[in-house]
Length: 381
Ligand SMILES: NC(=O)c1ccc[n+]([C@@H]2O[C@H](COP(=O)([O-])OP(=O)(O)OC[C@H]3O[C@@H](n4cnc5c(N)ncnc54)[C@H](O)[C@@H]3O)[C@@H](O)[C@H]2O)c1
Ligand SMILES: [Zn+2]
Image (cartoon, rainbow, N blue to C red):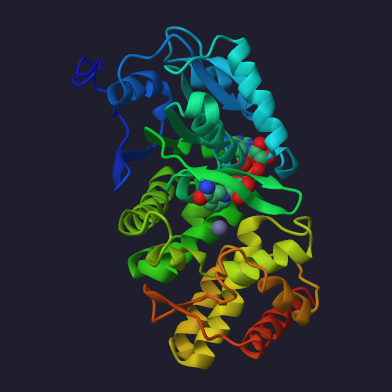
């Protein structure tokens, strides 16, 4: 390993935050800050040793057009670019095979390195390609959407979809490091930003009441993409996820709480065939329903439920939602987080804490879905 010669380089004119992921199978840093692309190559060498002969970057044509030049600036030899077209329909085994073959053709070997430079789709596919190529090569995540910076790049889950369902094939393969450059979010469409922010709202509700307060008090700065405000929200969200993953890498217990808002969120995505809304937007509605259920069960007060629901709508607007409650309940029964027929559900406990229950009845779920649909109808009247 080649180490040390970059130790004295002064990268950080801008502030960066470093969060450690430390699980039984991997230990690495998630670095978040503005302008990281300018020093990417030396940063990677600092954690992984001298760059190998073949460095691949998996990205999408759109992201490369916007940020390719900035990405390459710190590399003496430009990495070999591989492209995945944007969109969930390309998150497939067919894409994986194509990419693996391109890597072989370009002389990739066991010593090669892959950098996933894009949103969650590029990250999930890139991680899986890295896990599979020659039985596993190292990779680095350079997430470019809000959602991928706070959520999908952290935790080592990689994979693709099958026609039968989302993320049904995959592997745990942790990156060498994650570099989340907040500046790159400057070109992200507003709707993608707001959708990603729902995962930060989730992070606050289940584990960080300071983040809840910060997001309540800094809506304008955050939506304006003020660097300092975004850095705070992103670092806190990553810290929350890293902390949960550190305690429960394989989702045998605690990691399940990351699924808050996702039971009905996934059901909405499924019932609307992934066409009506972005993931975070579906999770936003799912959280509205889950808050109602929590209020009914008394794990949060009415005032807390109201406060948290307002927070969700501060980062909306959430798209209209016109489906049947019973259909959502049926769809939630097939969630892949349900093991052995047990329906797991995450409930907030006060603000900044959460637990998992296994005794939520279909009737309770339906009542929560009906409440959510009524709120949706009201807001889109
Ligand atoms: N592995 C995990 O733990 C995990 C967790 C959550 C979600 N995911 C997965 O993440 C995926 C969703 O990720 P996503 O929300 O990042 O969506 P995405 O990857 O589809 O990106 C959204 C859109 O933004 C564009 N884009 C990306 N960066 C941009 C930038 N800086 N400027 C302008 N446009 C940009 C993309 O080209 C794309 O059109 C899903 O497939 C989901 O299953 C994985
Ligand atoms: Zn999510």
